[in-house]
Length: 253
Ligand code: G
Ligand code: G
Ligand code: MN
Ligand code: NA
Image: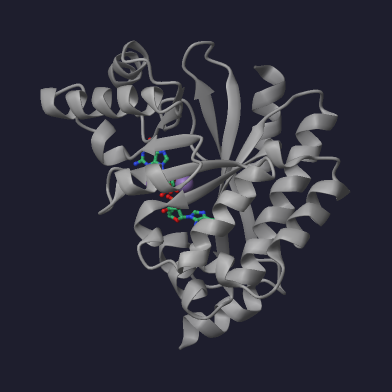
């Protein structure tokens, strides 16, 4: 398969980079976090979406190497943010396949953190609910081990999977990320708003904070703010951007 062959060489040829999308505190409107989103600049095809190549990387175990690149790059960026006198928590998407590795990803992560004078609490690990379905039993143990070490944990695409509530019970989650599918309709549809409000209330009662994703309009922003949502992310605030743009944005903020 051609794309797989290209994916194997992409890393050596430095065709990957991270974009960052700001996450705004809805009480203060400060940018407190950013989500790292990988981009592949293919020499012929141009930008290839992670929706296409991450599943391929998961099937072929390439995700382990790519995952290390993502973690290392995010640490580098955060180091630059700090050197500019700013601060952020960086949110990183991690595939459950990474936790099946016999390679010691955790030692790797600690090495990268130490190299840049960072600590686990500077990082939020995002796990997609849907992907947990096929996860091995030890994945959950490993996730709880991460939070015990100080990493924050976010349940991504919350509400879209089969057992959202079961995961909340089983894992030491810090954040739920309300999926864009629920946010889209809140200004026009009472049921969508009610669902978001219910998720926010439930999360707060469990001691979790809420990040709403895919906010595109001022109306959505205001409704979520009124509903007590803690953080917002979406094109209304900013699109995913290269590192330089993030650094510039933070210093103007
Ligand atoms: O940024 P974008 O909308 O193109 O991302 C598409 C999908 O790819 C999203 O579901 C997102 O979670 C996933 N994705 C983006 N970046 C990463 C990454 O660095 N690691 C993993 N595992 N998934 C990612
Ligand atoms: O990791 P997750 O599956 O949540 O990935 C988030 C994806 O959503 C990224 O690919 C990002 O580019 C995209 N995204 C972020 N904000 C918005 C938005 O406001 N509108 C749309 N259409 N997509 C968004
Ligand atoms: Mn995510
Ligand atoms: Na999502």
